[in-house]
Length: 87
Ligand SMILES: [Zn+2]
Image (tube, rainbow, N blue to C red; front, top):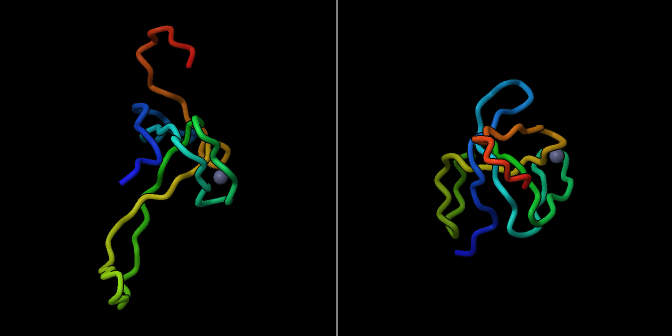
């Protein structure tokens, strides 16, 4: 299963909520605005409940999944340790 992103580390969003910052490994689409999240761009994810549906072919039983959110929709501030790494 190819990875589409990797965890960068803990971050704080514009509401002061703790979240996790990710870095895209390939182009993704923001689940909120539909905008592109370019490879190597920072973004966050939100949990979303998936509805229970009788989709026998795929066996979806409902649960939670995560959707990417671009930093325009959810600005992030990395909780970095201040190592001086500009990137
Ligand atoms: Zn967005």
